[in-house]
Image 1: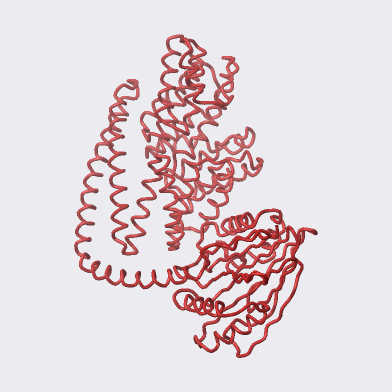
Image 2: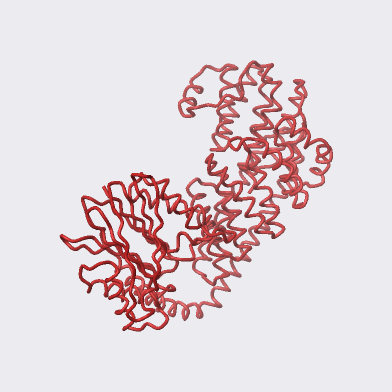
Length: 627
C-alpha cells in the first residue's frame, strides 16, 4: 500500500525544493493543466524549444497519478529537448519526476535511486538549497530494503524534521513515518505518524493530506491492533471520498479488508476486498488487484469454499507472473543507466533474479500443495456439495415464497406518490409490506415485521398475507383485530407479527398499530414531522385483542413514512444506534423530495452510518406523498 499515497508527498517535496529554481527560470511550475488531451496535442505540435521542454515536463507530472507510461514518455521527451537546448534549470524537475514514477508506479527502485541521485547533484550544481536534500534517496533505500543506509540518512533528518515541517507546512515528518513503516519499525512509524497528523489538524479540511491516516492504519495493522487501524483509515477515508482520489480509496479499502480479516469479521472483509478488487480491475491497478485477490483466497480457503479460493489463487498467481515479467523488462531498461549507478544495478538485478527463481519455485510448491490439498478433499467436497445444493434449493424456495408475498407493482394513484424499499438481513427476512385498494373507498398501506428471520419468519409473512386478502374494507383497527384472531388460531408457537395499517382517504388517513415502530407524518404547511406511536401487542399474542385508531389530515405535500425497526436501530462500527431522533430530523430535512427521493436519502444516510457493516436486521420503508 505504498505507491500512490507517497506520490503526493514527493510532488510536494519537489515543489518546495524547486522554489528557488522557479524564480531563476521564470517559469510557473505549479499552475495546473486543465485540459490534458488538448494540451498534449498542442504541446507535441510545438517546435523544439525550452518552452516545449517545460510544457512537456508539466504534462508528464500531470500524468504521474494517472498513467505511468504516459508520464515517462513526456518526461523523457522533455529531457531530450532540454539537453538539446542546454536547459539545465529544468533537469532536477524532470529527473525527480522520473524518480517518482519509477518508484511508485513501476516499483523499479534502482531506476528511482539513479534519477533522484542525479537530481540531487543537479540541484547542487545550480545552487538550489533544499531543507533535506537526501530525502528522496532515503526513501529509495527504504523501499529497496537497504535499512542501514536509510537509517543513516534518517539520523540526519530526525532532529529538525518536525520543526521544519511545521514552519513550512511540508510533509517531511510524514515521509519519515512512511520510511519507518517500509522498514517494518511500527513503533517509530506510529510516533512520527502521530506528529504528522498533529500538523494536518492545523490545515483546513479541504487542504489536509491523507497519508498520515494511512501510515498509522498500516502500522497498527502490523501490530495486530485492528480496531485502531480501522479508526485511522475511516477517519482519513472521509477526506479521500470528498476529493475523489480513486487510487487512494482503493488502497484504503484493501487496508480495511485486511483489518476486518484480522478481526474475523468475514462479511465486512469480503465486502471491502471485493470492492477494492473490482475497482482495481476497472482502473488496472495491479497492486490492489493482487492484494485483494490474495486476501480473498485466504478468506475462502478458511471457509472451505475451495472453488472460490482456487479462483483467486489463480488470479493472484497469474498477476504475480505478469509483474515478474514487467520487472525483468525494467531490469533490461536499466542497462542504459549512468555508469555511477551501474554497479548498484548489477547487485539489484542479481537480487531480482534470485527473487524470481525463488518466486517461481515457491509458486510451483504452492500450486502442487494446493492441487494435492484439492484432491485430498475432493470426495469430501462432493458430499458437501450435494448437501449444500439440497439446502440451497430449500432456502431458494423459501426466498421465492417470501418475495412472492410482496406486491409486484405499486398502486398507481393520481393523487399519491408511492415508493417502497426492503433489504433483508438474511436470504429470507421477516419484514413485509403490501397495499390493498378498495375502489370508491380507500387505499390501505401495510408494513410489518415478523419475529426472527429465515424460513420461520417467512411462514408468518405468508399467514399475514393470506389473512389480509380475506378481510374487507374496514377501519384499520378492526382489520388488526380480525387478523390477530387469524394468527392466534393458527398457533405458530412463539412467532409473532408486528404490523401497522394506514387507511388513506381523500384528505385524511387513519392508522392503527400492533407493536410496530412509530409512523412519521410530515406536514408540508408547517415543515414539521409528527412521530405517531400507538401502543399495542404484536399479532398472535392475546386472543380477542383490540387496537387503538388515530385520524390525521392529509393535505398536498404531506408525507407518511412507515418502517420497520431495522433502520432506526442499525448499529455503527462501535455499536451506536442510528436512533429515531436522527431519522425524524432527516425526514424533516427531505420533506420537499419525492417519495423515492425520501427513500434514497434515508438509505444513503443509514449506509453511511453502517460504514460497510452488514445490516443485522431487515430494513423496510414505505413512503406515501400527497400530490
